[in-house]
Amino acid sequence: MFLGIDIGTSGVKAVVLDEAGVVAGQGTAALTVQRPQPLWSEQEPEAWWLATTAAVQAIDPAVRRSVRGVGVAGQMHGATLLGADDRVLRPAILWNDGRSHAECEELEAAADFRGIGGNIVMPGFTAPKLAWVRRHEPDLFDQVRTVLLPKDYVRLRMTGNKASDLSDSAGTLWLDVANRRWSDELLAATGLTDAQMPRLVEGTEITGTLRAEVAELWGMPAVPVVGGGGDNAAGAAGVGVVRDGDALLSLGTSGVIFVATKDFRSNPGRAVHAFCHCLPGLWHQMSVHLSAASCIDWVARLTGAAGAADLFARAESAGPAAGPELFLPYLSGERTPHNDALVRGAFLRLDNETTPEKLAQSVLEGVAFALADGLDALRGAGTVVNQLSVIGGGARSTYWGGILAAALEAPLVYLQGGEVGPALGAARLAQVAVDRGDPVTVCAAPPVARTVEPDAGLVERLAEKKQAFRDAYPRITPKKGI
Image (cartoon, rainbow, N blue to C red; front, side, top):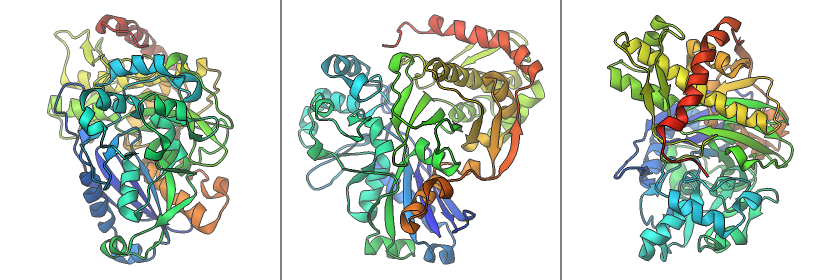
């Protein structure tokens, strides 16, 4: 048995797989985000640890006792700042925090982040967060002895060791992505050195063992803990996106289109990300959208829907392209293709006939259109995407799948267990490490549950709204991206 733990933004998920890759148990625990000021998004690292323990303990004790290895995945880019005694110095600044937009422009001028780091400097990344702390909290910055990503703080609590896999570390903007090592030049631009960074490992490398007190708390042996991956890379490993050209669509809090590549292919011109994969010798490209399934929860609250399932049912009762309503899903700003931390979401073209059902439908369409913008950016970089495997909580809705396939004009492949997401991949990475298995074999794609082909009629019906969506962005933001 192998345990995978995913430190998400809205919750922690723990999943146990048996040696055949079948889910033998799972548990979850909720997390909340604090927004003390506009553009800010923070969490307390202690909350990650408490939720991790709660999620693991929710799994059947007999299953836990059979665990032979642990993999960790997690939300990327979060800045967890530790002092000399490994004490947390402040709440972690999260991936969807937009406060550091001014620092981004300064870092772009200070070092070759696009060439070495492979990406535009954006507020979501870790480096500008530290530049912000350096400017606005200088006394605290001087106390920083270690910077960890969210899952790696949990690893520290699990093992006592400071390590980070390359897929997650690439999202800090301090990594020489092509050469898979820390960059002294990029670290120096934010006043840091590699002495303040964790040890770099591949996702299938063992980083330590569970501390005795943690093993006792969790009711399992003191087993190895492996590098794991950033949430998107781990999610890719979970559904077999481990060969050049394999692609997935992740519908979590954020939305991601992820394409595995056999080499480093940097193309920051349209805010396409280029990172290391969590498997040795692989990289990946991503388009990233800061709000995806989170928009579903948001509009459900706004319209009084009972939850996501009720919201999907309301949208389906209205039907695709039911009215003129447009939704721009930039609730936390946007990355691909706009790189605009200040833009915010909007409903447009509302009229006297607008209903809660039509608003629900427009939200499903708006997220789909934003993802289509991202796919176009990847295709513009020369990436060929023939089909997309779908993972994440949003994968549960077949109705939304039809809208997404039509907007993206690409087949969507729904895999058995795909909604489990990054925790599944983290468990598989543990299996590769402990059993020394072949990553491509262990991380094979699960069986196909269903395939959603683009409906030609729906593609045509959505075409006018998709173009109106694209025309609307310049009208709702006073600021263009870098």
